[in-house]
Length: 140
Image (cartoon, rainbow, N blue to C red):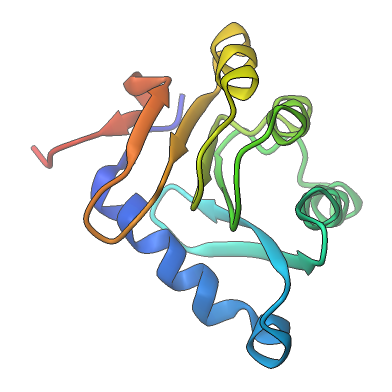
């Protein structure tokens, strides 16, 4: 079971934003990014639809022979919906973080499948909804 430091989670949106090359030109794309538990960016995909961005990300990892994604953290640029949780579960992703809020259905489904869900990720805070055992809140 992967465990990630809270400090790493705080920095994920900054890495995501800095890596969104198309967003830089358009200002109108969602992103889905896969990180390792040290916060290193593994893969990023952008699309006008957040579901499409995640489909592209998971598809790229599948085609590269890297699924299931059980040692990774997913960050999405918007809300964490029921459908995004479904896709994360099927791909074997244990931790889903979002810049926005998760829906109540997303939290329920995540709890049922043992997925950690984190919302409102910022440089100084985040909300932890499920799977607290995967988050190390303090070093040491």
